[in-house]
Image (cartoon, rainbow, N blue to C red):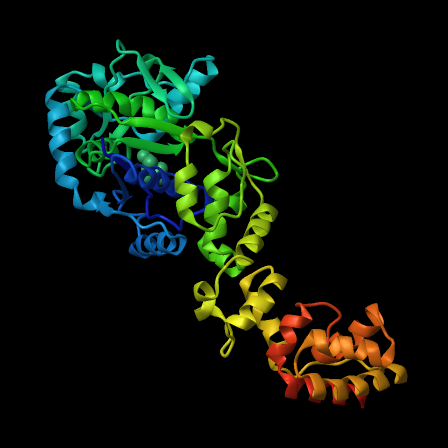
Length: 446
Ligand code: GLU
């Protein structure tokens, strides 16, 4: 059977690293299924909250996913599906599975406080369900429009086999009937999501464990709509290295990663495996992550997001990027030879510019002692004989001056690059070229 997954963000802000991880895992699950019985990954924009949803966020979500290489097979929008919700609602109303409520937010709050004060769980008392027609009419006459709750079936134990958490069981009587529709007619997330999952043929709902109790309620909604519920899997939440879901992590998105020079492949490689028993590795080829993706390896402990681990994965990935993967982000004039010479010395791609400026010059040379100036004069002469061949040049100088080790190599590196460390000189010298190198050596010799 075909696997259909979805990522369902509300466009009320930018994606953060937690959302990105959920999107990625749903995408990986569908990609893996593509190689077997077939898979589809949907982007569903949960934009029923008109006040807080913004078009700019919808666009940013699409752009962020594209940057990560996560390409949906289809996109849906809840705001375009209101008649579907209306139809399902009418059916549920007919069957007595939704009921109108008139309590104000303050009244509900007070009820909760009283329950908690008595040591009772703050479960909605279904007072509205007990109202008579006359009482309801009186509320309406006062101009109070109802909000709506879904009536849970208290006789039906709620159970499912969670793809990550294993067997789950809830007692419906221990849950509040969820509000599904506001007094102004707008929808809360819970019911539209179920209707969409049914109508879009979603087979697998993979989301954060903060949704576990929503799942309990939604399972009864699937049943009420005469539909089988999808498979559910709830992943442990992402926490910062300090051990909790920090504010920082909750607002850390693609822009911030990009600014830090993090490659999308690095973020994907880290998030694909974080919280699983598989090692995080600098895997730039997403198909390898698809192949090895396995919900069975997900643990129940919070997944720790560590910036330094990301930086390490990123550097390893940068070191493996081919010229054609980065060509359009390299300094003008830098060719494949230049990239391969400089690549091992950078941590983030942005570091390339500094190294490349060493090739193109001018370089900032240190002042040399007399003895080294003589040596560098000899080096300029030797270079005119050997050309830009580091091995030949240093062999000749060794022979001619008797220098070896540091005293042979360091003054050359300093004169040619202005630095004590850097890319392999054998790769760098041909890039600098014999002419520019000769000029630099002569200038250093004074
Ligand atoms: N819009 C919901 C959210 O962002 C979707 C949750 C779900 O995956 O069902 O929390």
